[in-house]
Image (tube, rainbow, N blue to C red; front, side, top):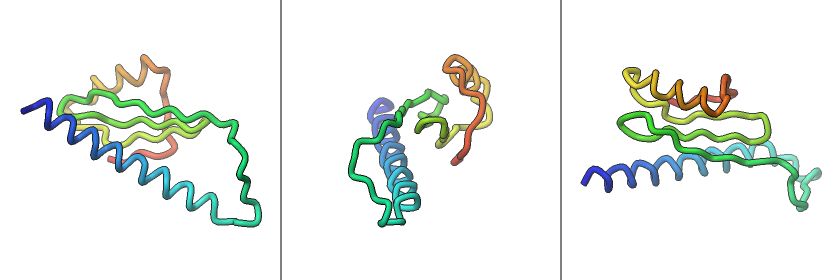
Length: 96
């Protein structure tokens, strides 16, 4: 049962992540005159980090870092350790 609940949470976070990416794309892509259909040379990284009662989503687009759902305050040390292992020390956007 617990594993099933975690899967639903991961699915929910994935939907939120792609929703945010869509909103960012709409915001930065609103100038249709400069629309480019070519392949971007940027890099997209999406990671899930265990924060005790669920997963946090970490998104990196080039040098733009986003953290979604950092988890409960009681598990902050666990999250910080994982972020340090990935050499992540700042975020442009944090969604709690």
